Image (cartoon, rainbow, N blue to C red; front, top):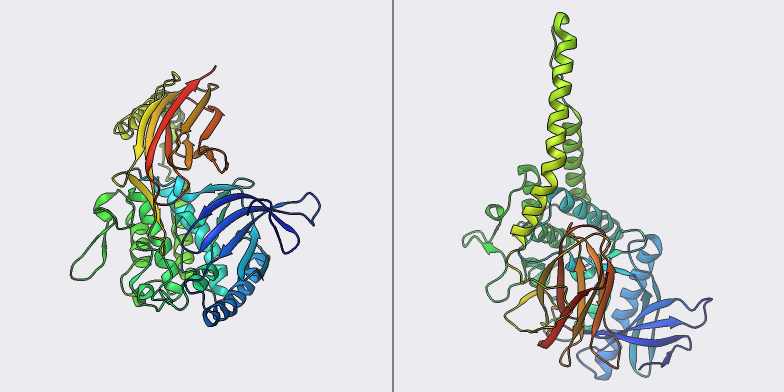
Length: 447
């Protein structure tokens, strides 16, 4: 389909990915000034008979109109530019979001700080509150459907239920829309409600805190109480009781005991942040005797100065030691230009699964020690899979990524100048779900 023109204006310029619903392409709008980039999704309902296609068209129109309204009113939801049928195929044209997938930030075995997770949940719930206020249920909230936009660092919620519903109509999956691990019992049974979305956001919060991937595969996922079916996770991470109570209520097995919608969950998270802020800003002062007040102040000042000096010296050292200990289980990647040969297999770590294709995105993680100002080139070369590389800074945030979409080769390259000293993490994976195969990885410091 490369260079094909759709609806007389959308020129396909690259293939992005394939999934259970069909194909996704990168395109440019040839009728607008500057020919801005957009995303085109080509849909394929499971059944192709005339009756099923007609029903898919009806559902497609209803869902697309709903998504179009949401995107126009909220800048953290992609706008839907067009939906149409051409040569018997259904198409969606959406806003292209340049950013980093949240799944890249959530690495199995490494949890994020509580404050960072609270902020992620607050932002997600703010978007979801808007969606629920317009009587819509997303039904497939998961890290791969959340993008951290490069332009303003805000989270964007993508891939609404429109595409999923069209592709699952008329089959056993008609009413089961969602992803195992993030989908609660009532949704898996075909009866989703607003609290089903709240459950998914809560699962993301627990995943971010614990480093546990909730997708059930090869013994992974959260343990459950055999009697109540409630998740067992509190013993896997150090977290405040207040935040743990919120996450537990968001992910209760019986939806009647959850927050009924994103609005109530958002209120709870904001109250938590407000309480923490109030406590941290309220420092009690000790009364000082009038006769020795100046001496006391001097003593306290000297003590604070000494403690501050120790903190300045010791905290960076402690952080670096913690990084080395937490990442010691990963193989080291030497910056000497020599290739390391390995392969992605079904025994590797993975990020997500697609509810319909059952695909997993396998990955290997490597670490190297870098210096501020160092320029590094990282190459992933493979003849068996579509290479995907990402690089994380010592603070855990994504620094660079390369999802190779060239039709001529399957290689990926990152060229980056390191912003600070510390331990960097290289994640080698595939842009196509379910792909396994051999690859070579090389890294070189060029200055």
